[in-house]
Length: 95
Image (cartoon, rainbow, N blue to C red; front, top):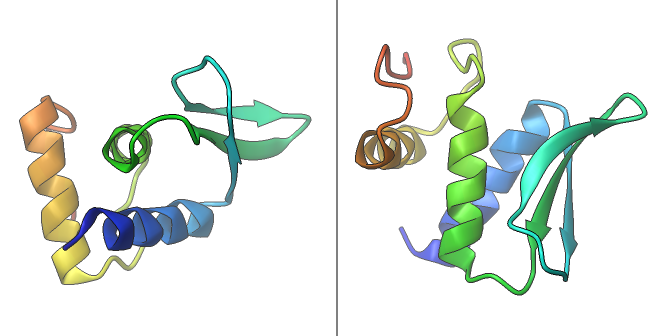
């Protein structure tokens, strides 16, 4: 899966979890927050796509995804990235 397709699918998954994604320029890394009750993920347009993929993968590692449908190919890719980064080692995504 190419990086542009991967980030698109990760963004869709994050939006399913109730987050709004903002893409901005600046001197920040990118992260998620709750602002006035709205769940927001801010991605930095100045960073490479691969970096922003990492921001989304890290956010997903913090969430319970067992009740969320994730395409099998995307699930496999997410789990591979979690393993590589040492995230979510206690369990993996369920079918």
